[in-house]
Length: 256
View 1 (cartoon, rainbow, N blue to C red):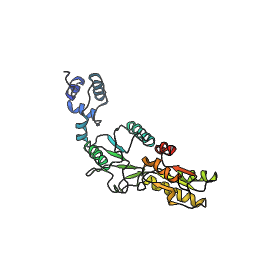
View 2 (cartoon, rainbow, N blue to C red):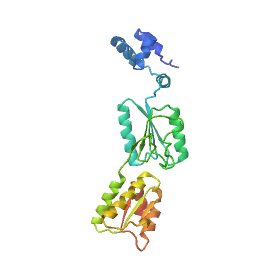
View 3 (tube, helix red, strand yellow):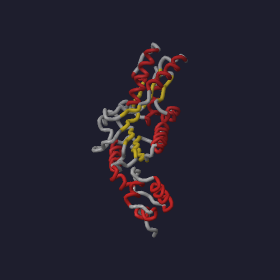
View 4 (cartoon, rainbow, N blue to C red):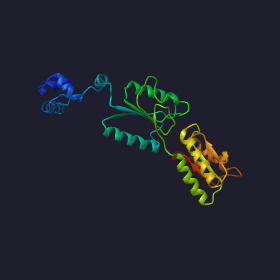
């Protein structure tokens, strides 16, 4: 079995003290340029890998960010994960990625896992932004938090998509084609994206001089598009156009 290379090996090979080698490895100052170069060259030559867990304990920082979303297969969230990972790695951070599948228990378990890993920050798309208000992190986890596309607690920063603006554009377009009864099918109504879309629909219909009809709106689950569309189009006063709140609904809507 190959013996693990230690910091003592680095110090011995570079001709410096263990303390000097440690300061170089941990990015501390007060090391002469010549000695720093010698240690850095030795690290590469002998393949030394610092113990990240030990470094985290000593420095109080892990240089890792937690990223918790519902489903990484969702195109919008996949773009978020890729963009966040690219920028964080550029800044010298690693990323822990977890999915909660809109399951509160899985979300809580993922938050506990990230907390145990001593993450330095969290990007979080909550399961339920009403129930989790004030609790975007795990108990005892006090880290900078960005809540993505949800309403969130005061201690978190928010990044929200203007879903209402997109719906307004869609209604304006459909009204311009002559549609007077426009339906909307979106995700759960207790979530920010659905609430934003419904607000956009109300405003756009009002601007177009059209009535808002609650029965032409379904805000239940992204997985119920087939049922929701079927119910809408079998009514005598069915809408002549339907706006979907997500690409994942398209298959069910077309089948209906």
